[in-house]
Length: 466
Image 1 (tube, one colour):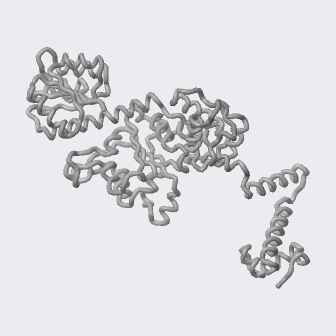
Image 2: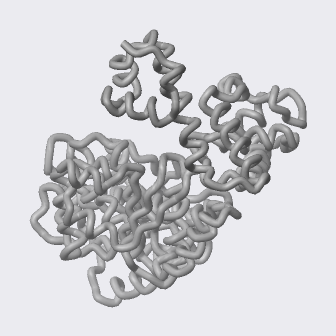
Image 3: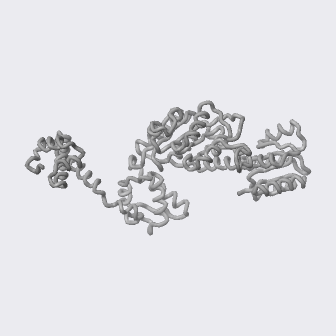
């Protein structure tokens, strides 16, 4: 991790920071003048800068201006023994993160540094997101509808609930909604509520005050504060514990929250986008999810289709992921044969787009040649190459129906329905040795209903009654 830079001509101030940051296990580097720090900027980058405002041979405000020109996302804390209005105004106008008057409390100074480190990490994430925007690909009508919805929501601040199976790309859509919203210049913060232990989730979301619980040695900002002015993405919202559902509802209702152990309300200027792979209506009926919170979140709903509902996108996605894996590994991209593409398109992909991406990465690493055929797929995929018994008879039925339609035949439901019932009843009776009571039980029918159907279908001469 990049270090915190401490710049002060006073040796005792540098010593105080050295001891305090060493105790907190925060990497640091000290400089006795602004000139030394400016020279170091030619070859190194700080995570946070703490600088005195008045030093011989160079001003902290001049250093602040230099840093903001070269590294606009690096937080700068200005220190001064001259607590005057002009110094404070100049510092903040120059883009300072915070103003620290001397003499200062060491714990307060360390807390400021920690806050600046959090801000630096958040700004880095935002920059990375802007420079490497995630791709959402899809030509299927269902995905085009998702794209249209994102476009319609581009000027909206509305809460959005994204539903879809695991691996369908819910976070990518949430990022796209943020990137095309009026909040795009502010942070996008994501949290998977199912991945964080229940006793830590409250602090993770809302932050905590120093001493709020054992181990809380410093104040910590939660995800709501980190997302200030931007978007907070709550993934797997259906798994949120009931007591936190109540706290979240309050934030969405009145726009304020409290840190754990805090007594001052904090205003939340945050757009919430939630996602779940679960059926929230069912969880509401089962008493596992608050109905009022569900309605707060369900202002606008976007459903992401599973990959099996957009099979025409599989070749497009597969080629994209093969190229991406090749770029990441610095190798030539593999190519899928027509047979391999056709075969992959026939699979259901229960893990959806994420499973397809993982497969393409596996092929980039493990497939022996540049051209990938069905035989080069992982064993767990090749085992699916033989159609299941269910798939076989359904395919045969579909073929018969298609032939009948091509012949101009009508009344298909009645004709095929009678044949279907005949086959079921005859096989059940063969299995039970003609015992109708057992056959009726296996078929899920009453004995009288089975007897009536045997008569209606003309099966009396084919069966033996008991």
